[in-house]
Amino acid sequence: MTLPLPKQLARESRTMYEFLEQNSLFVVLTIVLIIWAGLFFYLLRIDKRVAKLEDKS
Image (cartoon, rainbow, N blue to C red; front, side, top):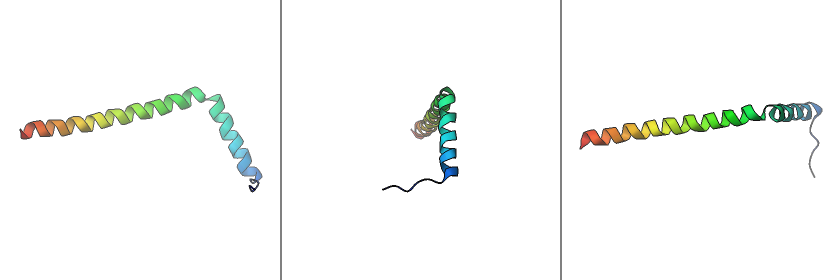
């Protein structure tokens, strides 16, 4: 048995669903941009570590 949501919370949930439905392209683009930025910084960090190891040798 689930408890009913308060009206305000249900309205906010509906509004958020409508926003995501109407702007789905921008949501996908934002997620892809975050993934690319994460990969970029990860590769940058790996490059610095490899350069440091090369300098030691």
